Figure (cartoon, rainbow, N blue to C red):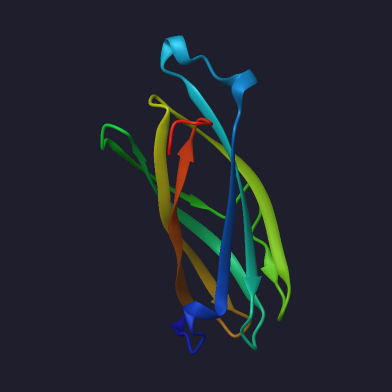
Length: 129
């Protein structure tokens, strides 16, 4: 694989989060969250997401790293000026935390590059001001 000419800033990541009250058990320090990520390819080349790396941090500053192939069982090909969205979940042992990381991607010509995933917050409703 060759180094990519794609500027990672041309791949836009947006995140929406939701607290899953019905799946959480606060009395057992079990807080479930859903996150929906949209990846928009604003570059001039189709790209494929091959792997992910997450850093999950709880309110006690404890971190967990997760590495894996693709997302939700897929290695999506994202065309020029198109978007791909998926939803997944995360469980924390505190009512607030954050996630950040990166996606490992390749262009149609095999050029590899990483796209940073901006830090986003996971929090039960009304816990933050």
